[in-house]
Image 1 (cartoon, rainbow, N blue to C red):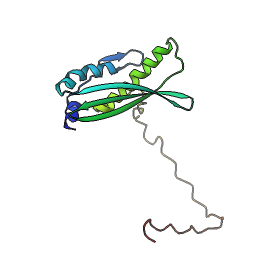
Image 2 (cartoon, rainbow, N blue to C red):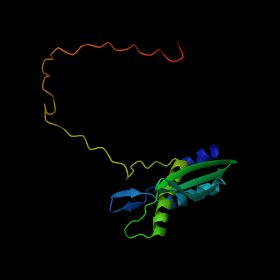
Image 3 (spheres, rainbow, N blue to C red):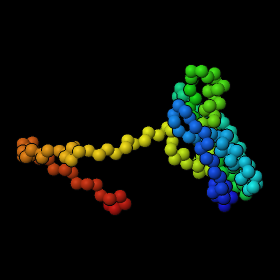
Image 4 (cartoon, helix red, strand yellow):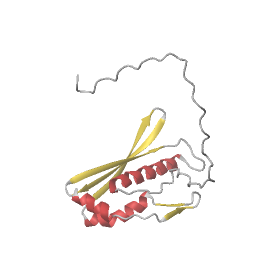
Amino acid sequence: MNELLAIQRELKAPKGRFNKFGGFNYRSCEDICEAAKPILAKHDAILTLTDDLILLGEWVFLKSTATLKVGGETHISCGFARLDREKKGMDSAQLTGSASSYARKYALNGLFLIDDERDPDAQEPPAPQTLPAGYGTRPAAPPSRPSTAPQVPLPPPPPPRGKR
């Protein structure tokens, strides 16, 4: 376990790529693997990545498994991606490869404790707004009227578990 912790501490995989369309930096599966190779060699560790297809209802998912063997121990992490049936401009091999890269990246993120702190899939909360004084306050509630409905007593609560 100490070897895994050392690898996790040493591994730095910066977000060295830029997505022009989305306007964000990111790292790819390949970036993580390239950053990991010298550290894995230093710790005499072996990393393998495998993919499996899973059918759930009508959806096909690609399950990627990252397996790290180091110091007599095996550590496993999985990532998933749903396979699109079609995407404009991509053939079936490209669709599968894209899903594989995505799932492998997240399997590696889990194994090496890499946090995608600014996830492009996440919706960031809107920035807080300063409102004019008194804006958004509620007017005083009107006086309540006594209810004419018959009052029905509530049943007693159940006894705590384990005590009867």
